[in-house]
Amino acid sequence: MDTQVLIAGAGPTGLTLAIELARRGVGVRVVERAATPAVGSRGDGLQPRTLEVFDDLGVLDAVLAAGSPQVAMRAYAGGRFLGERRMSDWQEPRPDVPHPNPWMLGQDRTEGILRDRLAGLGVRVDLATELVTFAQDGSGVTATLRRHGAQETVRAGYLVGADGGASIVRRTLGIPFEGSTDESIRMLLGDVRADGLDHGSGYWFADEHDLRSGVALTPLPGGDLFQFACPLDASDTEPSLATLQAVLDRYCPDSAPRLREPAWTTVWRPNVRLARRFRDGRVFLAGDAAHAHPPTGGQGLNTGVQDAYNLGWKLAAALTGPEAEAVPLLDSYEAERLPVAARVLGISTALLRKHVAGDADAHRRGAETHQLDVGYRDSPLVRDTRTEPGRLRAGDRAPDAPLVDADGRAIRLFDLFRGPHATLLTFGGTAADTTVAEPGVPVHPVLRPGERATGPAVVDAEGHAFSAYDVADGTAVLVRPDGYVGSITRSLVSSPSGA
Image (cartoon, rainbow, N blue to C red; front, side, top):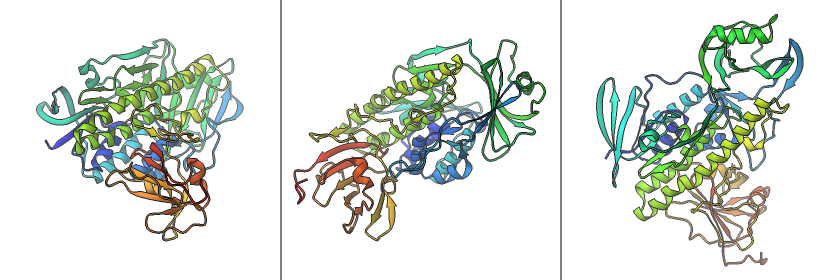
């Protein structure tokens, strides 16, 4: 069985999952129904946690080089300049959070970077290849693919449906996609060029008598395109350049910029849905196939990337490890990700309601959208043996911190975590419990400021690691391959000070 995992869908979710598997040596195949890669900015806001995932996957530098920070929006009502608005306040990097701000990059360009990374691992997406049907048994999944009219039968150990809201995988499994579609709200989205507008700013045009009616033009990095977003009424039927221009003319009849050369347009309706299950035997759902989000809050793409990041290492471990360990690992995917998707859907839906209601702060985005607080404290996989837990708990995101290694080089905890492995940190100059470390898991003693490191030990030169992890000497912290704390164990060995 050459194909160990078959992935349907080559959006950010499917590509992230494929990279996660390929870098672990898992035989993966990605099929995409479309004949060419998708065009359009769509999900153009990358949240801080997604940037951390991309750091681990080896694509962060390319993403940062291609994208840009959020820009200020110049707001106008009835042709009158109201001032500048920002979706979120700029945050300075912290020792524990090196990327605290959202980053803007069109989804098509993000996908291009992920495809290049996947190709570098020896895997290319099979475009114009449609998953027609599949059946599973106790040892694998048999799928029928269609390409240019010809059918192919593929056998794989597992199948992952990352094939969007209309997922053939979810429909074949008969998994309910619970929620609603609000036909009373329609929004026109697209990427266009706009004559006479400074590409270094965003623009928001509204009716001075109804500020809910705003039209947004947000500059896209790497060119002169703006992402266009505006509400539609019953008379606006076609997602065409003429419709785009007509809507804009209504809000600034004497000074509307001329729009031209639309690269992509669509009509969006609030479709807020959550799959009842994320797993059926050897078949999994991820990304939009498992949860459909309104665009408010920029959560959909980011949640899908985290689905893939959570599932990838578990599938790889299930394929290469003892069979008895595969069941709890694979069961934990739904146990961990379904509650997160439900919570995130609540955040983006609440923001949509504020927008529809015309709340003055409907455009504002806070830390709740950054996904840094996503965690799995209730997961069946996590373990914390301390009698008095600190601020950081098993299941939380593992914080970053600056360190110095045995050669005197400045490094970070994220440098130790980077790669397809778990990491065991043993805090303090005493022997910590390393029994939670499996073969192949690197162990790094974390020493206090002023101590000298040898071998794999590192020094917490500024005290930020001990502060962020809030642990005593002799504590072992196992960081999972996806950057979350898997366990915190306290050794029976005491430090000389009795801490």
